[in-house]
Image (cartoon, rainbow, N blue to C red; front, side):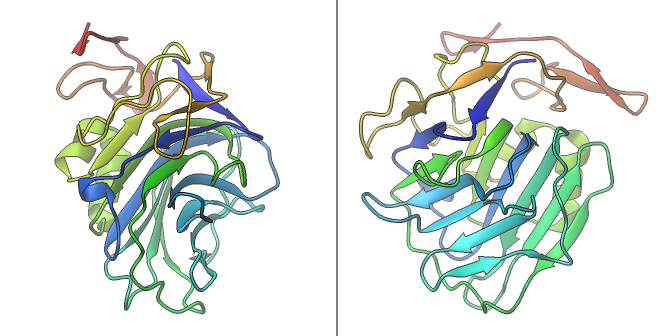
Length: 267
């Protein structure tokens, strides 16, 4: 399969204008499907930013490969309790979700692909994060040249509502990106492009394609984006209702039918 690679130093993608269910404030869910490489440092998977500011918030892993959610205002850092380590060189579906940022602390939902998901409440010591300021743009793979992610990422998704344990378990079991759109995710970006110059499309249809170089805070684009074509991956389908990259057969993931997007159509 082909999947985008983040180099751990200066790779990131940007969504310049955040809209709809992706403009998270109080109840929200952040979800990523990743294949991390060895790197003992802070790594941001997806962050919300305003122009010329520190990140409003970020979701990623700490130097011990434990998932985190961080809110800049108040310097509030949330980790799962008890801790869960994300092992390198394997696929993981991870999420942070919260029902009410004014009163709750959030829950981490974590699944090594093919294994039973675990669900951990966030540490309560920082207190509730409080309502987030709306982001102007999203940064994927670094906060902005800081805390860069090192490894492969197949998918990011975001929505402005809580994700239940049952719904996460279903996503982890079926591995269908169409299920994320149906479940109300306002942004669903899949990074299975065959060429680094290929556009990244929001499958939910709420954001402009990510394509070309980043020319400023108000532009979509890539920064040092590359493709890894040597991994076996876990996702079950291409567009909704069609065979895809990998299918579940006899308890294992096997190659399915490879398709690509040409002129807005899957062929």
